[in-house]
Length: 114
Length: 109
Image 1 (cartoon, chains in turn cyan, green):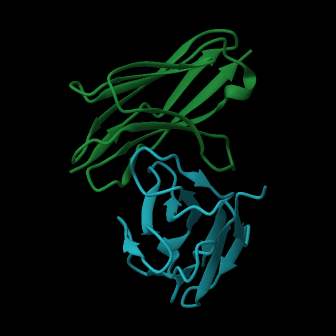
Image 2 (cartoon, one colour):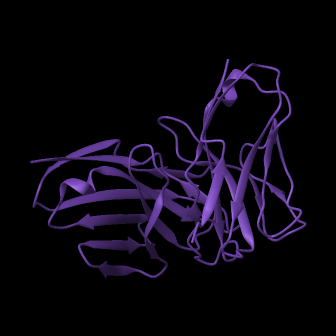
């Protein structure tokens, strides 16, 4: 069982360019999340989705957009990358949002914006 | 504001016991999670506490006191593979996880 996959593993991106980080899960989880992890800070929620067709903003949504066309996929798009978006990005999923459900994480995408 | 505090780094000896503390101030409380994260890898779930008291799971135990806004993760019989960061996270009243910065645990032989 693959669980959650993310692509690419790492990427170097020029400032001002756009990029989509891909995330796919095969657990039929309803809820999905995008986090960024920066040194010295806790994981910060960018966007989430309670179920296919719905999305919501997290703590740090500016500069990012998401879509949830189906249960399995939850891509994150940076429309015009800036150096402050250099980070490790984790996609996660859970059976439902909240209620003590553990979140399962993908392997992460390491993004460097120059 | 919402805040999760954990020590930045701890060192312990192989075979020993270590306690990692977490204090929190959040908008509501729907439970507290502990995750383990090895360097360069994804976080993985360790434990979940929603009621006061101790939850034991093999070598790992997690304690919660809601009145004190306090939790700890207890690791017994430490092994070298336990070298990792340990992340404390609280689910707030909006069902969002608020994460601490993590505690890096270094195990020495």
